[in-house]
Image (cartoon, rainbow, N blue to C red; front, side):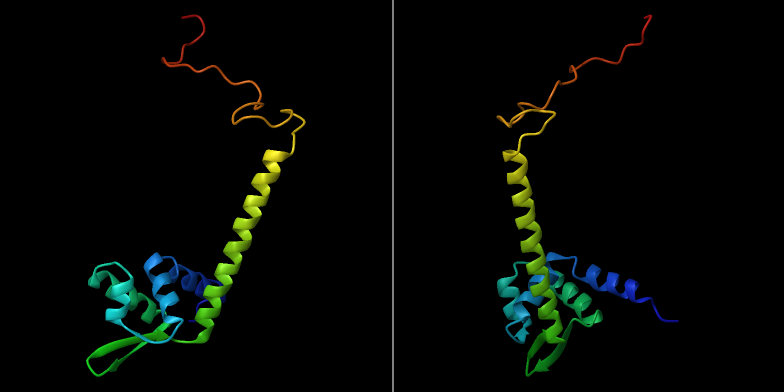
Length: 139
């Protein structure tokens, strides 16, 4: 029985959910690399890198082959590099939008709170701070 497309996509994106895997894919965009070169750049234990490479290989995102004594890794398809580039563009847009929204929130006065002021100012009344246990009426 085949898996629904949305589930397969979710698995693909789950595979990308580890910083070491993303870094490996970024490094392989420039072409095949031996494991020793990946280790030199990615400061993780060899066993950790091996585990992450295995996850990427099982997901079909990278391929491996021997070149003499070296085990070489490469992206399985240029589409992986395209996916990383799309992620970078999306992240750039999202972060830019957040910065713009934050700037707008700081600059625009709100009818309920009045003009913006120093941090915490104009936020309206604050609830009193209590330090003891709650009290019940009539006690």
